[in-house]
Length: 397
Ligand SMILES: O=P(O)(O)OC[C@H]1O[C@H](O[C@H]2O[C@H](CO)[C@@H](O)[C@H](O)[C@H]2O)[C@H](O)[C@@H](O)[C@@H]1O
Image 1 (cartoon, rainbow, N blue to C red):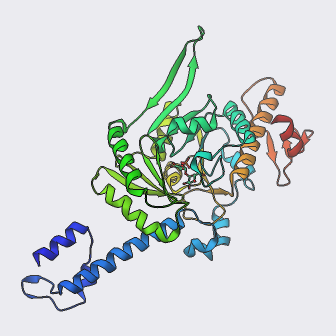
Image 2: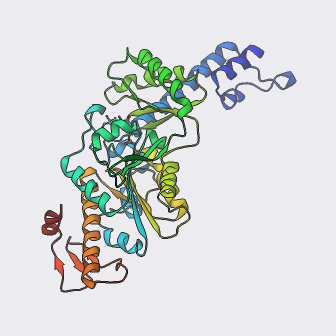
Image 3: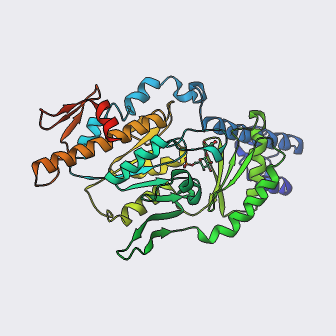
């Protein structure tokens, strides 16, 4: 029996429920079960666990509604609880009244479409132009699971804040002094002591997964991604087992999931939500009630940030998804093109506000000087100024 108990501990499996129905308890409070039966149970339990992982891997990036069965009947209710941020634009602007908007943008699946090769997840020129204009209107940060340098190479905008490696590598825009000296601003790396471990585990994962066709391991500096988008679904369980076997030796690292990707990261309590709070603080909004953070993301890892906003009761999250998903976000957008349209409307609204303010020549900005109507037109507080959203958008962007 002692040997059997050791097996249970080693495999870290709770099988009490499975075995308790086999026979009445033996003397001394032990459960009597044959070794064969026990091994069978362990196999079933391990198999069930792998299946649970594969189900979860499948749900990580649904391509059709059936992928999320619990929610498939619920499209209507989901739309009701997470309406389109484009349809709700006017209400969103109203809610930000008197507050300073701060923008947080995830990268993959939010600013760039999801593609098979993570090295080719380019952002369109139109999107870059929009984000550049956005950053002129509001403090703007990119919060990504990728390493900071890599996400910067895709975005190529110096005026933004960047939080790479799921927020474990944060840097603000460079500042130029009058004498043209460049100084780095805000640099926070809460997991720097994990660098050697991450390097080591990256190499091991490359080695362990090289026999799995389509698997790709990406070094994200403070975390590692193991991609399975191009792996045959029948091999997902096996791949997850391989990754877990490497991680057994690294109790200070944990495994989470993103969109068809297994993410390995330090066990420190730091995530995109913490990064959002850190950035708000760095921007001087630590205990402010007049800040309105908006976080747009498509991934499970973005949920930490959505939750922070929900708990703080400040601003809101927007989930980018075509399918119903469990989320703490308040609104939804279907794809990066819709994200771009939403950002353009924010820019346009802000520019109209500033124009209205300068026309008035004094006083604070009227925070809702324009209304974006459901047909896409904008109406200024001054009803004489109504213009078509489309023509104005092309003029501004
Ligand atoms: O936080 P994010 O900016 O969304 O980064 C999360 C992961 O994004 C990348 O992977 C995802 O996008 C790839 C390109 O479209 C896609 O092939 C992959 O299946 C997605 O999971 C990135 O490669 C990962 O390192 C990030 O962790």
